[in-house]
Amino acid sequence: MSIMEEIQTQRAVEPAVVISEARRPVPCAVVIFGASGDLARRKLVPAVYNLTRNGVLPEDFCVIGSSRSLKSDDDLRRIMREAITGFSRVPLDEDVWQRLAARVGHVTGDPKEPETYAELCRKLSEADSRYGTGGNYLFYIATPPTTFLPILRQLREAGLLRIGSEKARESWPRLLIEKPFGHSLSSARELNCFLAETLRESQIYRIDHYLGKETVQNIMVFRFGNSIFEPLWNRKYIDYVEITAAEDIGVGRRGSFYDETGVLRDVVQNHMLQMLALCAMEPPVSYEANGIRDEKIKVFRELRPIRGEQARRDVVLGQYRGYREEDNVPPDSRTPTYAAVKMMIDNWRWQGVPFYLRAGKKLAARMTEISISFQQIPFCLFGTKEVCRAIEKNVLTIRIQPEEGISLRFATKAPGEGLSVGTVTMDFKYAGAFDRPQPQAYEHLLLGCMRGDQTLFARRDGVELEWEFMMPIVEAWESDPSAPIITYEQGSPGPREADELLARSGHAWREIR
Image (tube, rainbow, N blue to C red; front, side):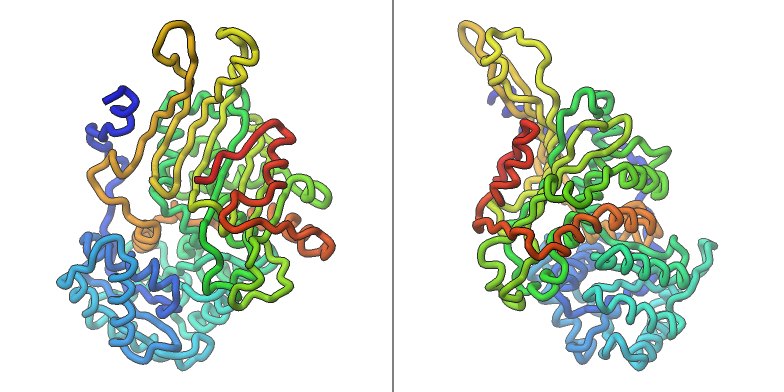
């Protein structure tokens, strides 16, 4: 086995250092609005099952689903069992399922009608008596964004949403609300204002599920836990940064929702800006929720605005061929399914370093990664300038999905007579390094909310700053019907114009593979 193969397959033999203990949540009832929907089936139900299987949930715990289509507790149990069988990261264990199924209930009704919440109150009171949930209610809004405010208003009218006590032993309601958080800056502010009148900020958990991914959480540990990288993490050593979120699938059954949202609202405004902030932020004063979120918010404030003609130069939007033939998509739709954006951060650390973000559907492969390209060597020792230009830059890549891990590309002498310089890659993979499974993002997020830990969630000011940055880009596209719609082929890397965006600065995208 070669040295590089040994590096690639080496397992983590040193025991992990425990920074904080994983606290068992207090007893609570989890209420899922949209219990029959795609998000609940694919993500939430498998997450609840896996947490139950791992023994990290409290004994006094129950799940209450709410939907219009399901008619009974047994209907919900049937849907949940199918979801676990189809989407859980581990096979269904009959004993675990029976324990969970015994704590499942359902409320049938329109989420806009008061009668639904009267029945929900009855179910929650029954849960307090039967399961000892103690008035602790976690409300998960897994419905289309248009229903967020109607559900919240009905919860408040029913007395289920209230400003909770900050005393640890008193009961609480908490709210988990899915993205997109608003459709624009004004709608995000309207939603935030309603929530501020109803709950404390500490009771509100705005979801960006990328923050629950192990490899996204690892960005901070990688940066601030290793002294060899942080001194190089600045404009003096880094040439540019790429952040890619590529999907190989189309909109599927989400055509109606996606056409109202598009790639800028669905991915760039939340997932990609959050990843950018974790890469660009300064070290926080502590590994606590507000310390981390304070530093991310500074990055959002320092993003250079992209407005008017600048949006035409630094933003490429495209639509995959065949998108307009998808179910529930208008035949004349101008909704972008691909975006490439050049962003600059105006501060001491990053001045002059471009951050290139790209996201899209129906691309060549499913791939989410962050790549940091370091400066070229400053002086040629190995012959002619042509030879030195052929030596590839050092590139550090953090793979979010799939094959989660970190790789580092560097130059080395190739074996043999004379001097021949080659490039090799040192590769770390989560799956091969740790003898433990990786929890899925929604497992982290549900547990964080139950424990009252907001580290993996967006804060009000952060959400509004993200929208402040994104709205001029969105408006530049939507206000000009003459702006060309760039069509790209399915299975391609995206529009050719996105390559030209980087080429103007002498840069190039990494291959999507």
